[in-house]
Amino acid sequence: MYGDPQHLRVLAGLLAREAERIEASASRLERSATSVTWESIAAGRMQRQAAHQARAMRQVADRYAEAARAVQHHAAAAERQLERIHRTESRARELLAGLEHALAGGAPAAAAVGRVVLGVPLPPPGHRDWLAVASRLAARGVTR
Image (tube, rainbow, N blue to C red; front, top):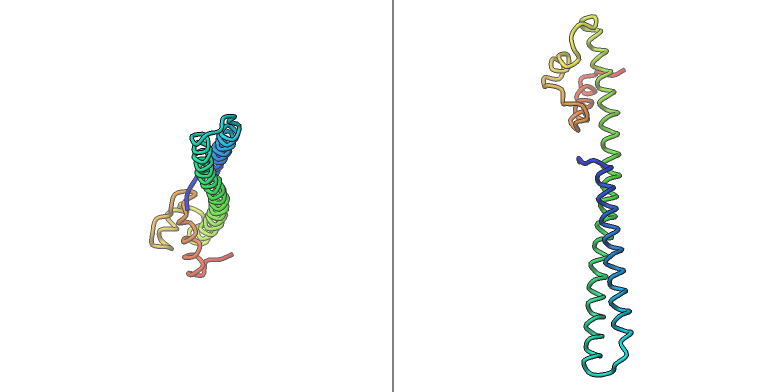
């Protein structure tokens, strides 16, 4: 799960404002249609058509509002996941630094120790693969 939580929150706000705008337009359409002073078959038909259109607009507004809530929820989930990745990365780097010190008096780089101990290169900072690195270290008994 990737995403910039701040950017996602901005997008959620845009969607929510669009939902409000569409809802307001539907209300204006209804008010305009019901305020017609003439009475005829055409007036009745126009009012029914406007009511139908206002309902459709409200359905669209509801979908926008639902999308805004979903994006906001995703932003919160992405933020939690990014925090988890950063905590796990920090812990894994601490463990690797401890291995460095134990294996070679602190001389080799943590990345080299990671490749030796894990058999794979370390992921870039903030990458979700740090969650797997921590699991691999724990599986090899590297804990503090």
